Image (cartoon, rainbow, N blue to C red; front, side, top):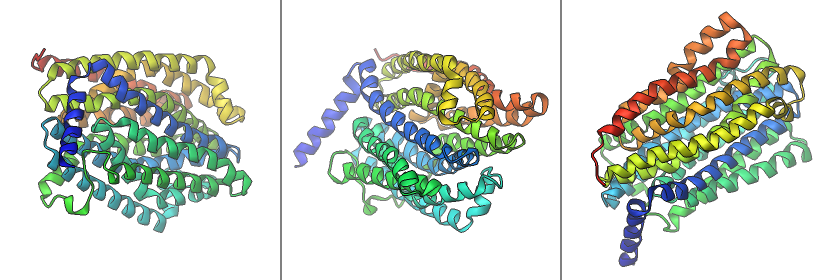
Length: 453
């Protein structure tokens, strides 16, 4: 049994350090892209089905999206933090500490998810208001958000399990769990919402059940011995410094997701001045762009384990080659989807909501964000590379750009000058600024890497 375990570990090491970089990134990126697309499709399905209940109900999906971003912020902090460390430890063939970091991050994320869920349910009404709910949206947001809070521990835990699998180079296993949950949610939405006449409550229940099932499938990969890392309470570290290392390494993800949640709250608050139609329109646009963005994000996440593993193994030229390949592939994939969005923006918004005001507001916002998609691949890959190789300070700074440093001042200032147009264009302008900040920092780091050809 021990011999088989050693052979499995050695085979995975050779795969991650000897497979041609472009092929390896595609192998790891495609399952990640598929799982992210499915995840975003079921988020869009929620938006689509809930929008059938009216404009205020549609606005609730944007409010609860901020809640999900909070849960994911902690999940990704522990998941990316541990994953980056695990991949570099596996690159050094240190399997025992890899299991220690995996177990610690998993149980911490699950515990934080429980805490957020309980506090959110206890203070549900003020929580939904803080997230940007108006009085007309509030009843729908509470119905939907209650079940998301119940599923909070499973959502946070799934983020960790998913990222550990990816950083081990087992993206296909992660894809199975996430895809199954997404498909079940798309089936469950219409059945519970309209078949059982549960309305927004049905959408929340469907999402919660799909998240729990996805969690159980991902957990089974570890319990059945398909991974190098083991999960057990007894493997949790007793060294607080190792917990600190996980948090510091994963902090860029916390910043990225946390600022994403804050930016959604501010966006909803600014859009509320123009009524529920503006909140609904920007919510729909955000879901559509997240669908497009997930393709670039999926390629970037395919690159992350390659960067971390090979950086840990001292194979720096593979890190450099992998970065430029991922940026190029992301430009092609996002470019195709963004071009389609530019040409069909009005029709796409109309699929989700036939309200003329929603379509008018959403069309311009979608066009601007589709243009900005051409600037995203380099920003995403630069951020992910720094986090993967352990450059947490730089990764944290870059994580703060898109939804924080650049976006928040713009969303507060531009509407005062340009009104509704400022709300529609703020994110696109922030993405372009983030690109021009990331480019020189990334180029300098890649140039500094030793040549290991």
